[in-house]
Length: 77
Length: 426
Image (cartoon, rainbow over all chains, first blue to last red; front, side, top):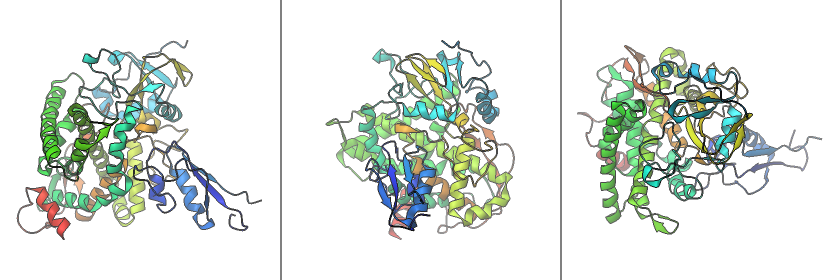
């Protein structure tokens, strides 16, 4: 599992985010919305996710209708 | 070139289709993935989830543009057949699309939509107060229709007690078959409602307030103010999208909960479960059943060559039943692990009001399940004559144990604006 070493999980939000805001409903702290309603991380590249937020990040990726959220789980090896 | 194999059994505006739209959606997934209809000037039907996503996202190859007769060209926008009124920004392509969409996004953002939740609950309570002592109501006409209409009027900054003008006109417009006298009447009624909107636009130009009409009256696109026709077209779309689709979602959900009463306490107790239930109702009933595009180039979809200029239907309701995306798609399963349904569309034209619709759904369901926990449907459920674009219900007659009003004594306030000010002050 993640968090067992110094390495981190990452999440990236692609430009295809179109503002459904389902990730925001799942985890508003991890996925804040900008004033246009898009994910504020859209197009910002990979962002580190702390171990306690990995579940939120994964769930956000799962609910996104546009598949715009990419969750990179650190390889447990 | 693949030959066109017309599906002659399919007419999305027919009475046969309205009787069981889900069956037609499921049938469309059988056989060749992209089918052809000779009706309404001819159009392709795209049904598979992956194909619908692909077309919706490719806004360069598939245009949403609608031209009108005085403009000479032939693009007919996002419905089949094309609508009679101009709608902005849904029937614009980039870059003009984005200039207008940027004006709408902030007023219906997730943060702003959630702020409206207490007000929407108050509108629901006002509606329930008007029927709660009698023990009987039409759950569409008395609650599911007025709450979204009142909410939409508030967003725009129109007088709230005019809600029925807009609710009736836009429901009847969506419900009526192309070419019918009912549609002509509804379009005329909507046009009269739009004249009232334009009166308000002129007033807000002189004396702006904090509402969408004031914002549109002062906004710039490409460095110039919006024309009256553009403002009218934006307001028409906000009203059309705001008053009808959410009503359909709430109505179908109330009908489902009549048949599954055991679910009611659990939904009321758990907002997460209520949200998931709403998503599954959105998937199964697909309030906006289908929209359309026009191909701008020769392009292949699902093995089918589509020619530049061809019309293409995006059959959201069929995509929502695609077993490649949804396990056991014909079964209502509230606890689906993921439910990335197609009901709000995909890509740049994704429904701008999706979060507001979800907020309205949650508030209205919560108030009904709290105050009318034992409602049961009686009599005949009346569907729209056509569910080709909007899968709506006209009537849901119900009875329930009478209770007292929640508001202060006396009749419900005729002027909802005063109700709003009272709530804001408290």
